[in-house]
View 1 (cartoon, rainbow, N blue to C red):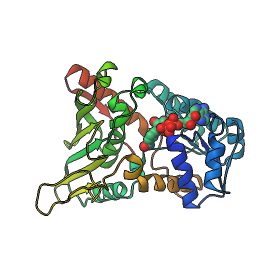
View 2: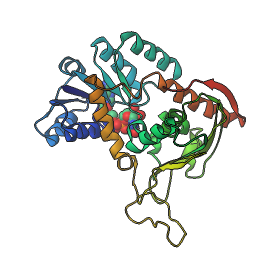
View 3: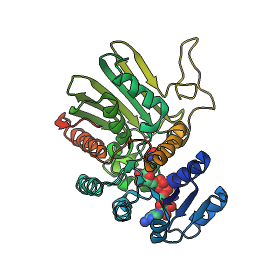
Length: 335
Ligand SMILES: NC(=O)c1ccc[n+]([C@@H]2O[C@H](COP(=O)([O-])OP(=O)(O)OC[C@H]3O[C@@H](n4cnc5c(N)ncnc54)[C@H](O)[C@@H]3O)[C@@H](O)[C@H]2O)c1
């Protein structure tokens, strides 16, 4: 199998290295419009990695494609891949707004081509085990989900005007994975935010710390909190509290949290610096699962239609933050 990668910036380069490390495909082919970028990366990754000079060549020589380009380019590349009947893994989000996303989801489903969306938490072994246990009834009635997502350092401030805001950019991962865990429709959203890290966020009408509550149709609540700076490192955790069990993911010796209890963990130099390290296993597994989807061995665990749920929830969070009131809605359960 030959996998093409469109865009080898931060995320595309990581996917290329992971595909090589997995050793499950015959060749990886890279394309990037920045002169020399794909050639340089292919040379560093060894003989099983090639590069081409145009998107047309990439489409013509690949059995499947990874789209890891800036978000604004996703719809066009997806459409070109659909015309070529190429199964794809597209980085999240597949489109930047609901109208474009709804249209592209329809086109994907009409074409009958597998498009896996790169919400990496869905591929993380601890998250998939948490979901399996919830669905198997091991947790009992889910009373509460707590999700924390704190970046170590804020992004470049030049990125902020195009980021879509904290809910679409940072919270969207948990707005995808928490409904995926709970398996119920969301009926109410409340969000609040503040600027505590840097005025650059206020300058673009955004916030840098926020909290969200989700109410599900069965009465389960989720509390989500996130922010753009965490002094100790990158912190992403989810806890599920149920009538039979309480489970956590992201709680390990590298969690950037210092306990004041005598026997509690003390975080040293080994705290997670960022999302590539924290979700290393998830990104590796994401590529392995994508290859299996292309080969027809497994179902797509992150279909395009589910992206409408997280984007609708992110938009509802922003409306709630701006109005100061809860937003009632009915966002269907994800698959
Ligand atoms: N899943 C995650 O955890 C995660 C994390 C970060 C970013 N992302 C997403 O990944 C995507 C890429 O983000 P990034 O941080 O790697 O960006 P980046 O700017 O580092 O890399 C994008 C690359 O795409 C190239 N490119 C631009 N237009 C192209 C085109 N038409 N065809 C081929 N290549 C093209 C650029 O030259 C660049 O090398 C974004 O959609 C972002 O939202 C996902």
